[in-house]
Amino acid sequence: MTETIVRYFGGPLDGREQDLTDSELIPGTVIRHIYLHEGPKIETLYQLISSETGWEYRLCGVVEQTEVQETRQSPLDPRNP
Image (tube, rainbow, N blue to C red; front, side):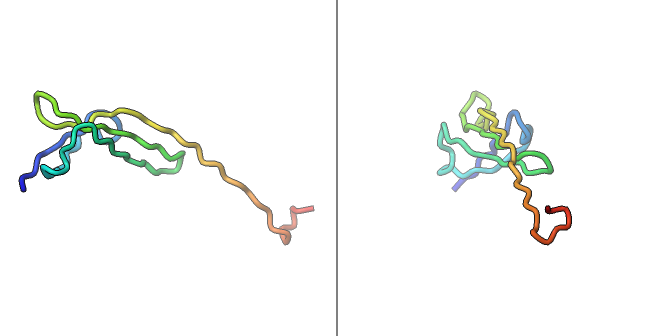
């Protein structure tokens, strides 16, 4: 089995490279990268394409999700009336 280097274009993975086997090189495959940090979770989508220069993952979408946090007060909290 041979491996091929695939390069990422756009988004947070821009410029990174990944080795894929021949069986993983399926044009149109979409992968999801989830970026977790102190702010909202950001999902980035990359689509695998074959170009003149080789295989590439191209940015094809970003999904931003805001986190909803519920705050609950304990019945023992003195601030709770």
